[in-house]
Length: 361
Image 1: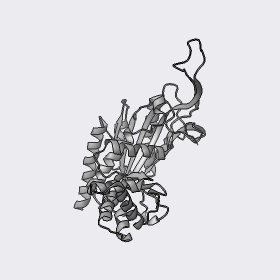
Image 2: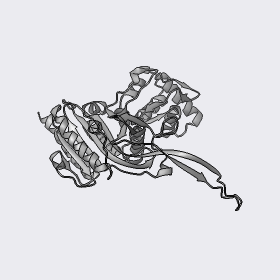
Image 3: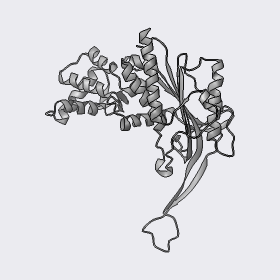
Image 4: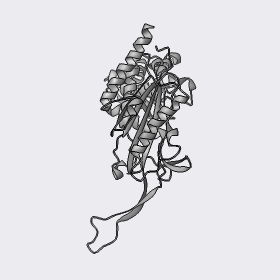
């Protein structure tokens, strides 16, 4: 285990065209007041959901969690994977019995609240069910051991039994625009394909709200806590690489079929710190106000803030970054990489060296 505090900080500047990727209860794009002006906002919950989806779709990592009310069905499928002779009803009853023995409340074969369960944990519960294990202590230990990577990163809250809670080792900030925004309205009509030729009216009409923005995004991971949760430096390193990759390349899918707002970051900055994590949103408390695009000015302000915060905190162990355009002097603040793959390889080498140096001390 690592004996020192290690924090991964990850920052991104990402421009998003007209879109509505995260709506409030009225269907409007989420916003927030910051620095005296209205900003576009994407909630942390929304982006964490996108990252978890990325884990499932793009990772070779098998121990990824499922958050569902259908926990009985999920464990029953694991039971049938072990014993294919068992029919659905028998497997469902057995799964519900073992979950109830672990003090997870269910009704009509469904959990009473969303429950976050890892793949490995579900398999071990299935084995316990087949073996007739009804020991509460042993079953709850299964739910605490071998947490899925997303449970370790984003945590688990169980209102009925707080002992099953898992503290999150990561934090994701609400993404907000680096500049002021105004919500706009798209008035649309749809024609009826089978309407008479002399019918000039629309089959339906309505409005969609949208805005466009250049977002500042931030997340961090308490690396020393993640290692304790996963009980392996190698697993923690692989999880950190997956976290960086998913943070960069995931995107909430709200209204994506209407706007096709499939963008990627224009800048990605990764730092490893030994003192504390640092959110650089303070760079944009004074909003960017440019008539020639917001991305370049936002990237410059982000790196300026990276330097300014060193008046209060230690210099990072290392900083790696990618930008889509060339900027002067950024190399003074970190090592530029050509691609995300290149950045992840360099990150792994440097973190491994830190781990090995600590082991040799």
